[in-house]
View 1 (cartoon, helix red, strand yellow):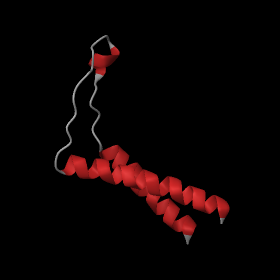
View 2: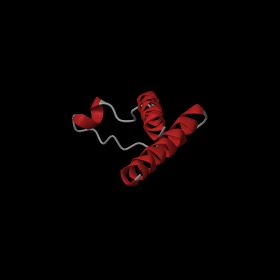
View 3: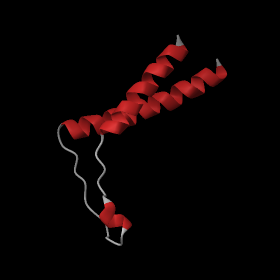
Length: 68
């Protein structure tokens, strides 16, 4: 049961990470400052918060599985 839940959370976490946009492009690589202020709004904020909570759940479930 815990293994199945862990796999589901891992898949959802991977998808939520892949859906996020990168804020810095190649300009930061080739000497540009790349310093931009990012304000997440709407769906982007929901995906960011979901990624945070999924990562916390993934880590906590990994600790729980370690001791059970």
